[in-house]
Image (cartoon, rainbow, N blue to C red; front, side):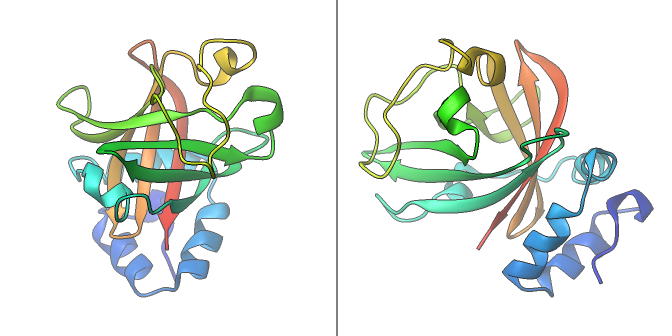
Length: 182
């Protein structure tokens, strides 16, 4: 059984339990966590850095991270990430993509406010793999409401699980998300 973050004093029992479960079990656990548990997990994972290299595979290999965010609706998604021509980029594959856009992002690393890898929606790559939706800016149309001025900061929970927090215009938005990589 994977413990609830809000009932844990440290990340160790959560990470250990996640390591002992299958990908599908980790995804099912993640899907059952609401905002309270994601906030608790973010706090437990403080100081556990994610590197850019942990988010992608070999050159041109698209890696799918199953995702769950803390929003009340449309909370299930995937982040699809690829390293292409030395640039690590991705987009959000989700049911509302037709309305709000794919939310293309670049993967980078930061020292502040949270060290380690992050997803930046401030600009998009100059090209994308043919499997990705067409590139479009995140500050046009309805994409502006969701992705404009946003950076997602990341913390490691276990080797296959990440917790993230969204920042808009440099300030915490109060929205969290989790990712599980196969």
